[in-house]
Length: 246
Image (cartoon, rainbow, N blue to C red):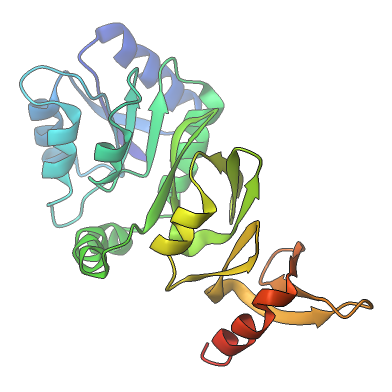
């Protein structure tokens, strides 16, 4: 892939260039701030932009917002030492938010996500954002992981499972922990998820079927994964009713 690297610190840029090259990609341009990055994007039309956040003249968030309005915007990956801008960053349609010092495998993972996004999908992101605004609820979950901060699409989530103080989010690429409550998630995503147990919310779109156990209880099968979740008796009738309308 062709990549533009933007960071106001020369040593940080040089390190990113080395990492990108080591992973088999090409750095087509470098920039010291958002103004330069935007110009380089318009000139070279890269596949990906690696953006710092705090920079002079135009910061990374402002630059990403400008880039997202282009006809064929590149994928945006933020590389920063500050984790407090994650929510704002993902609102600009960034696909990853990596914390410095970057690890090579984390960058490789983020770039692999970029290869799965074609230009048509990237063009659709601003329109999707407008549609999502009209449906009121979030369309992504933000999780802090060893890779930094990750954005998980709601459509990719199979279920939420309460685990002591945290909630496990099981999704297509694995699982992460988030510091939210099942009650709040249930209220926010009631249209797409259903309570199947006191400790579990299940995505309606990923339900494959129900199975009855020897003791008369039921468990639910999800598409594409082997895990089966137990359904409490008090929620069984509601689940059956919702499934009739899928």
